[in-house]
Image 1 (cartoon, helix red, strand yellow):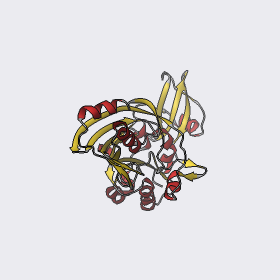
Image 2 (tube, rainbow, N blue to C red):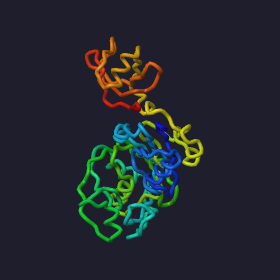
Image 3 (cartoon, helix red, strand yellow):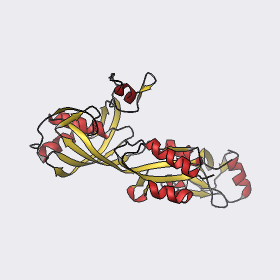
Image 4 (cartoon, helix red, strand yellow):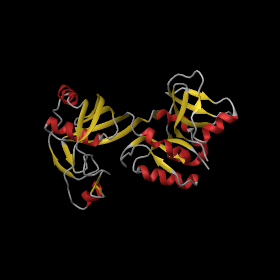
Length: 289
């Protein structure tokens, strides 16, 4: 059965689950999941995990993400992007670069966001977008997020600007655009979005969905590609590998304390393990039983 990660350059108009479903059928593998949902209008980096690699999804979701977003000023919609119903408009072609830069500066660092109604956040067992489609709006608790970088790249139209955003898990770029527009007094909505980096992967690592479907299992990269920041530790004999596969702690000789990618005698990636006092203990195994 296929195991590994394929980094998809998600096409516009597809949901993240649409991509997983298509790959599930093409690879004939039920265990397919993604790290970090992208809205249908968004494109870019979508790491998809297949087979044993689905065990690694939780390690991929918490890291920083990077986006290129287009902010259209002078419009407010019910979805906080330009696919939604327009609620109000205002003149915004007179917003200066200096004014926008000053507004963006207010949205960097640790802060809170109120999740949009058109989101997958659950309330009372129902997703918010299901309630929104039924015409119901409910109070949403603010959530902590961090904007590590918020950069103005260029003006692409009289009322439209391109931004670069580096942020934490759980950040809604749509909401950021909406809030920046509100701070300027003219309103704003996201008009385009590309995720350029997630889970340590960038657009240069991503392949179009059509290419991934055509290549099948050959498009998969090893699950260890998710952990390049950790050093490799290679087991030296079959008995030590057997103990590792059985979940037992193993002696790691002169290895220093820290987290390691552990490989078997034949080079197979086995586990992500922590070494303390010369003993390796598995954090998560990735081999087939």
